Image (cartoon, rainbow, N blue to C red; front, side, top):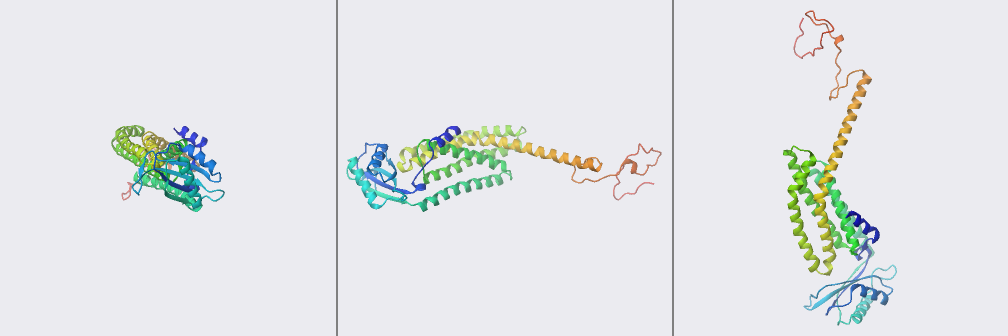
Length: 353
């Protein structure tokens, strides 16, 4: 899945919507169902208005009731102005609506809304989207680290699984030819919270199992995953049902948002079960090997210092030098000097004569 998603990003690339590039969205309502496809309408508008750039069409699947009580099929025309001017002028929007009305021949098109986005707003949206994603990752890392006893390995494993979700969600979004816009950013942050929530539940079960389980850490993680897998699958299925309903019945404006949410939630459920736990095992193993290597280096350094001083190495916290047996006074009772032992004097007692 990662290879397919990265391939989609490299081959097709991202198509940024007007939220990030600037332009105008003209929404009109047709009193009858339009038979032409969106690709045919976009190609015709490109030929009719060569100065208008990046023309894209979206149409609703069914007739919807407008605020005036009449039923219309919604048609969204996204376009950019000629040259450096990204916004369409009011007369250009009117000419665009009249040309569509003549070409479709389904009756009078009713203007519903006109939305223009300038370059200043697009720059703010780009910075806000990147900042929101970075802040979400950092805060989640800090919270999970503090939540699980100041162990950063839990937060790192959850964030790595989340990066997996973002790559798959973005790559499949690019393969589908959908545009990156503000609803996509909202779906991305929603998926981030959903995926991390599922990972936290699994990590919490791992922490509970560590107290009572006598096996290795990998066995603890495996048992915890088996215990929480049913809960994760059931939660994902109920959410997927809602996303599918939103995709097919939510209208043309919510279709891309529902698609991103559907792909992201499925990838998040997969990563929380099959990636977050194994990554935690790998990071824990790497941390244990690192700690063992550091302890071995400290012991080697202590032995080296002891050899330089000519004494035996002492790995305790207090390195205290004691006299050798030859430096101690001879014991009474006819014991030989070679057989004498070094006695540690107890404070508060007298030495025997």
